[in-house]
Length: 316
Ligand code: AMP
Ligand code: FES
Ligand code: ZN
Ligand code: ZN
Image 1: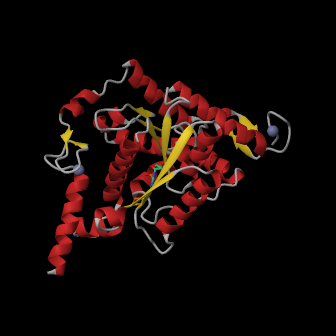
Image 2: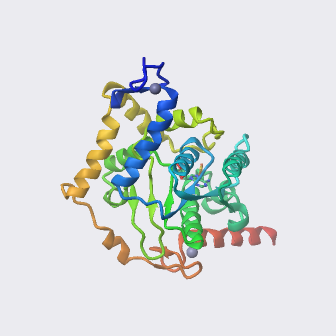
Image 3: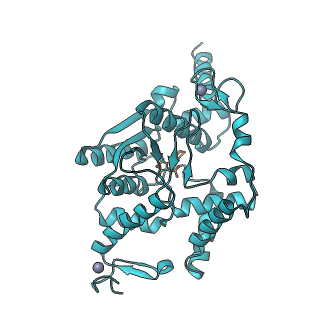
């Protein structure tokens, strides 16, 4: 297989684009594609301050690298979740993010959840759910809360995450199977700012996981290979597996499923409940001030309170 641009040995073949590229042309192609996505969805411009949420993995560190190379003004935010899983998962991830930011002289905000919440994510799940529930739901709500707060405090224009096409398609597929219209209405490459909520964007939403992985490897980015030890519910993995089989059989199926969904919604062919309806239920959390639909306190503050109460009960 030869590079389409220079004829050298190809480092990657992308069947859905009918495109094979050598390492150096691939390292140019990814920023070009990302730039096109940023412009297509009007995500941000060179004058905007972009906060990149980095987990230490290939997608988010790859994204930060690309945005920096494209000349955007960026800083990072890393949220330490206190996850060990036998591989010192959180410590290792933080080390990768620090090394990355340090080498490029970029600012990295860090937040330590065990300090803020009063418990690590696995402890928080145990303390608040009684049984042995997976920590992913408390983890998700904590990450959303903290990212939004750091973005607002830092006064940035936009928050960028490393979600790739495989992530987006697996979520879309799951929400379609259950016709979760509320979630479908909100799944988008850009979520506009609302009072109390920072604008959110996903510049890698059209890139496959193998493409972001190839970019990180060829760029020599030192990222954490381990998945979170509690990684994704079994259903999400089953969906990814199904979609990979579909893609192998019909290259381009994932991208087309995702883009057709976005188009159908944009043109009004797919009518979903408007964001305005959900908005009417929002009010400021009495403790932290972030918008919430929960009565009184937001879920994060309520979780935090319950953890402190449990700790007090135990120490008595
Ligand atoms: P995940 O929820 O693990 O699929 O991650 C989706 C995106 O959320 C990543 O690409 C990152 O941009 C962001 N993210 C995940 N974990 C963290 C973390 N611990 N700190 C900051 N951002 C994160
Ligand atoms: Fe949150 Fe795994 S439970 S990253
Ligand atoms: Zn080439
Ligand atoms: Zn709150």
